[in-house]
Image (cartoon, rainbow, N blue to C red; front, top):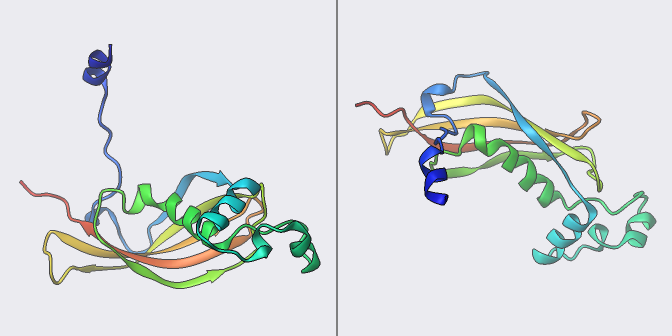
Length: 162
């Protein structure tokens, strides 16, 4: 049975080659992701981020929060992850993040979505089979409040010519 399934499966292309990007092109990344309290607590403890703001409700309330806020590094990871399929899934070196700014606080049960805009494109000086792309990525909660913004840069494979 597994053999029959494997023969009928269709491999879908994912991601984009360098030539698919043009300055100003906007990607509305699909899906979105709802963050739960348990994920926030687990992320904080597994990454040894022992700021009680992210796992102690009474401490968070004493600082004026209605609940324990979601760890900002988890917010970054989720929004970054939402963009991968459209921007960098086919490979290429990750070159960094710039201009990282946090906005509205994220709380348990907030649903995050992401949007990216192509802001810079250039040839790779060291690898003619790659280009270098930068995108401005923004994350939003269900109320359309911006929760994070950053620019990330990746090497992106060029379209193969045969």
